[in-house]
Image 1 (cartoon, rainbow, N blue to C red):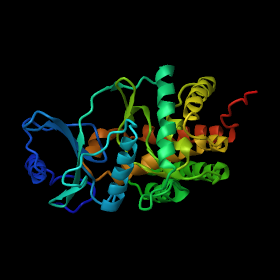
Image 2: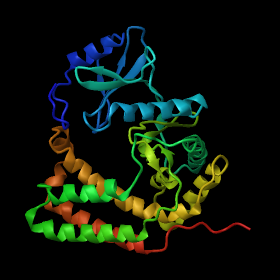
Image 3: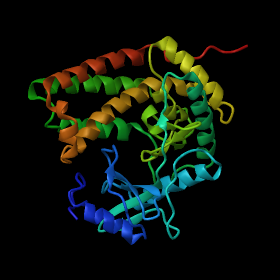
Image 4: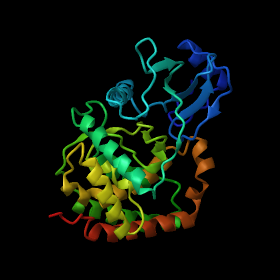
Length: 328
């Protein structure tokens, strides 16, 4: 296998089929690539016409024990009938190794896209997130990380400072506004929250709908504040977000307590995601899939746009946070 952590050049169809055979599965259909930049994910039918998804993990991103912690969390949720797709256990194992690649099998679950403007669906999602966090608060991950400013700001800043993607003419100005954003985030970040196991990347694209929500892709699961799994579901103007937040939290509160002090973390978390995302693409640039999928990262207009977005986010950080009116 190619030892580079940034590509999957050695992951040929033959290697994938051999990996499946090593755990007793024969792919009768072709391998259909599913949308995933971080890992390599394929759907197939086995000889019994059962549909599976196989995920090959990006080398050096997570350790085996970290992946197994995610799998245990999925099975904890599945054990209490929370609809989060859990990995298939084969001979008592959910994580397998073949020619240097770690991989996992999942059942293939179909469904429609979650409708972000459907308030009834949002209420269902809020209810199940309360249940997910109820389970997540029973203990925390010991090998997976806890969200902090080092992972989401300090390290990404170092990556971006060394990035060849930022045009030379814009480098000084971009890094200056980035530093202002980071300083502002630190002013509004606080630690008055209880860490719990989270989905970690609960955006609408990771929710399917089939007679209710189905939560997929816990690849970013980690410890953090509850609001991390809520804020990415909010969209639109502030007035719309307040309505959405009220619906989410009322449903959430049926199963788990929510500390309202975490609402002040919404804009810091949004800003942290903006910085982390740019560094993530930069880190992966050696993977041929990234230049092909993100060609605009080399354009001057893109980086000017990011600087403008950072300035706008600084203003949002300084504005009063979303806050629900108390009920009497």
